[in-house]
Length: 73
Image 1 (cartoon, rainbow, N blue to C red):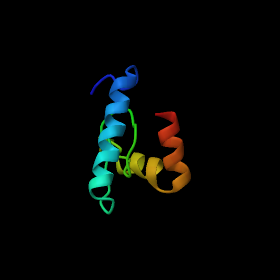
Image 2 (image 1 turned 120 degrees about the horizontal axis):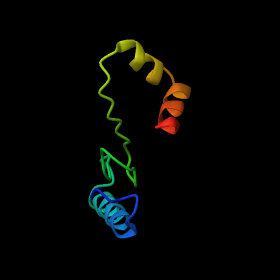
Image 3 (image 1 turned 90 degrees about the vertical axis):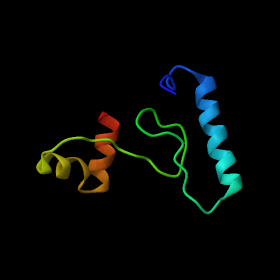
């Protein structure tokens, strides 16, 4: 679903699938979509392909840095 940012129907589909899976098994974490715009889910995946350990540490070493990294996307 590559058009989540522009398609309400696609966002509703992701949310519907999320809620269906939670209804079937509320004990398991569900990720609504991964790799682009976040719609719903219990997990948030971050795809960062940086190979520099100092850059990774800068982005993710504490909650404030993670928030800044996500906000500055």
